[in-house]
Image (cartoon, rainbow, N blue to C red):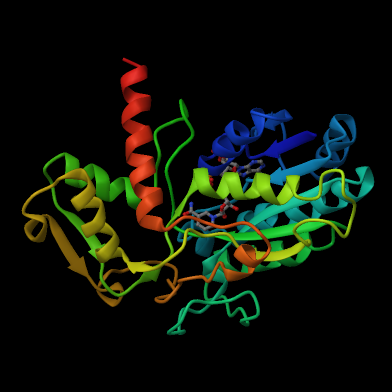
Length: 301
Ligand SMILES: NC(=O)c1ccc[n+]([C@@H]2O[C@H](COP(=O)([O-])OP(=O)(O)OC[C@H]3O[C@@H](n4cnc5c(N)ncnc54)[C@H](OP(=O)(O)O)[C@@H]3O)[C@@H](O)[C@H]2O)c1
C-alpha cells in the first residue's frame, strides 16, 4: 500500500514511518514538505501522492501555549484535519488521525470508553475534539486516541515528554517531581504504530466490511497508573536505588499550570482488543522501550 505520513518528524510520526516502511511504500511529510494549515497545499500534495492511506501525526501539542494561541491550535488540530479529510475523500484514501485523553474532563473513576461523553476543559482539548469530528468527514476514517506517549523509533531524535523528563532525572542522579493524583494509560509510540498498521492492514484485499471497522478507538497500552506509580516502575526497571528520596510526589492543584489538566485519564482499549488488535501492558512496553533504546545507543557508538 502507499502510505502518506503527515507530521512524520514528530515522536509518533517517526515511529509510524519506521513501522510501515517494513512492508509498504511510505511517503513521509514533515511540516516543511506539507503544512496542514494550507488547505490548497494539502489537496494538491495528497492528489499527487495518491496514497491508499493518510496517517496524520501532525498536531499543535503545546497544551499551555494553546490557551494564549487558540487560533494556532485550532488551525492545526481542527482545520488542518478537515483539509486532510477532504483530501482523503478526493483520492479515496483511508484517514488515520490521533486524538487524546484530554477530550475528557477527568472526573471518572474507571477507564473511559469510546462511548463516554467528552467534556474538554482547555483550548487544546477543544481543538483536538473538533479534529476528531472533522476527521470523521472522511468516508473511511479511524480516530485513535493515544495518551502519555513514550519511546522512539530507532535512530529518531531523542524522545521527549514527561516520561523522558522523569527518566533523565533518575539516571542523572537528580530528583523528579511527579503527579500523585493524575491517572493515565501510558502508551509506547512503537505499540501505537504497530496497532495503526494492524488497523490499516486488516482490510487489505477485503473491502469495506472486512477487518477493523472505521471509527473511534482508544489506542493505549493496557493498564493504568498514577504518574508516581509509573515513575516507581521506571526506577525499578532502571535499577535506581533510594527511590523515595528521588521521586517527589506533587498534587496537580499545587502546580501552577496555564491549562486545566484532567485528573483521571485512563482509557479502556477493550474496543480495539475486541476488533483484533491487542495492546501490551504498559509495564512490558516500558521494558521493551528501555531495552531497545539501550540497543539503539550502543549501535550508534
Ligand atoms: N505526546 C503525547 O503524549 C500525546 C498525548 C495525547 C495525544 N497525542 C497526539 O498524538 C499525535 C502525535 O503526537 P506527538 O507526540 O508525536 O507530537 P509531536 O512529537 O509534537 O509531533 C507533532 C508534529 O507535528 C508537526 N506539525 C505541527 N504543526 C504542523 C503543521 N501545521 N503542519 C504539519 N506538521 C505540523 C510538528 O512539526 P514541528 O516540530 O516542525 O513543529 C511535529 O513534527 C498528535 O495528534 C497528538 O495530539 C500525543
